[in-house]
Image (cartoon, rainbow, N blue to C red):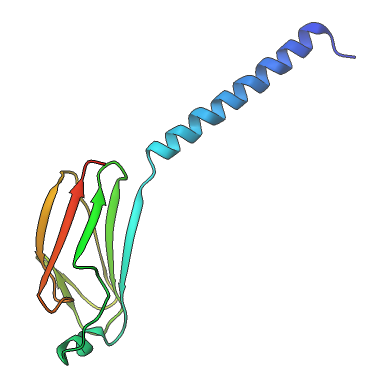
Length: 123
């Protein structure tokens, strides 16, 4: 049978382990990042050029600083695309994380209007 001192030591170690797990979980939750991934399928540029309306990217993308959001656009097409000043060649991807709230208006060859709006909020 365990002594009273040994039982208290085991309980203290268990409590410390549970508290440590809670602290670790909260740290992970606060530092978690969210990736918003959009994939451009093969043939998209040709379909857009023929006048077809595609729903690859929304006209407005909302990102959060608190959520540590990162925008990812993968180009699986055989043609390059452009988002803002960035040319995304076939097989490449574009990743952008914003650090300031605001509204960003970009050129985007995936929209008939050639425009993409990114809204970055603090929340």
